[in-house]
Length: 525
Image 1 (cartoon, rainbow, N blue to C red):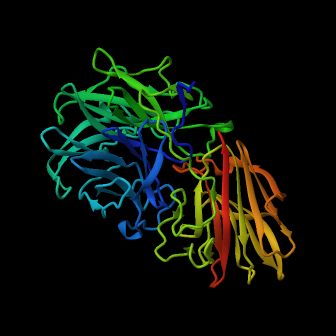
Image 2: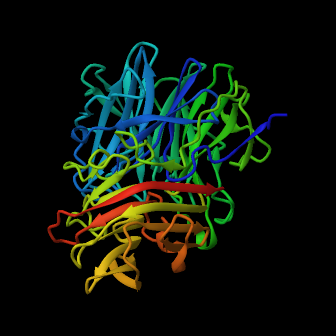
Image 3: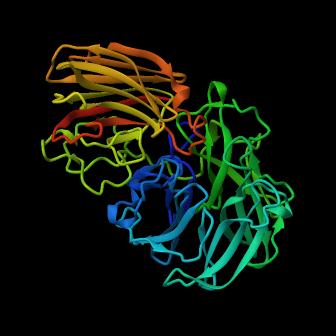
């Protein structure tokens, strides 16, 4: 008998700020990606439970200048919509500080897997978390967040609305403030989406900030630009009244979709914390059913009104997709979609063709502990318990050269296990960077070897690093280093841990390279 429930999260690991739309029997979802490239991962499903990644919204370096952003800047919350044969993503690109430069732009595609157009900046659009709404009369509306100039209290934000020209994506007509936070003394109102149902315009927002007070709230109005009535049951979803160590916490930033069978579902972000309220996986994508009550306001449609680890299935035909590959033998001409770099590589630093069957990383002066584009190819940590392994062929030619495995929260917090040399002898080192200060925790001279196998075992509260001279050997270099040092909490960050392959010449010129034959990642929920 088939299981009648699904397990949350829908997308495990750092996939925050989900936005969803339906086209017939097909569902499409996009999430934030911040400084990682390719950006804005796009997913497809037919049953709302099983998802396959089909592309990225930002997939050409020339599409967007990442401006050397720090890790929690870059591509913030996107929104995906479909209208008359075209897919639209609107997104906020944040640079020069989290509350400094905010460029809201639109990209379009006929096929959601791509290619996507070059961005069109919406001139004069301030704030974050913008969304598009196509009304029945053909008009196109922009809805976004703004920081109130009154600043009556901390987090005094609001939501504004402006019509857009559907050809140029530029504002036309007046700007309307449709929810000023002072009306409800709400803090950090953001993530607005507008929907139309039964003659009402419904406005869904996130409120309370991105940590323990996060929530989902709603308002409605008979006219799109009028005085929105606040839902008397707000927040319609939150875990703010629960202990932070609840299995699912920090719920908020939602989008909703109606199935072809008339059901309604909400996708949203949440985290799965551990001791100390830490979470290394970042903010993940979850789903919960909801229903429109007799008074026209929505209610979460389960027994406790919360986001649960197990939830009933949607009434949709079950459609499975191959899981994300555990192994990558680097035998294709392009990287699999789970791989990312930090910023777009304006000058290529990796190759899958220089040595077919290997990922080759060039040693470059850039280092992980600076805001830059290092020689790093990584993927998300998607499980609390995992084992990652790779086979590396690398011979350092100078004391400054090193290559190996990196676990990265951002430039200020990461762990490195690298092979270098000391007095001409191969030496394996483990580095910790905390608050931007890099320190050597241990080093070990090892026997010369053409190939070295590097492994990292992660569990809820710690990481252990191993090496070997065959693919079954796991000799400890260092064990149980603190996982909490890479928690999103330590840097007030918006991303989760990335792990992957790294090479550097540490501010010196080098023509050397490191070759990786394969990479394997195996995880357990």
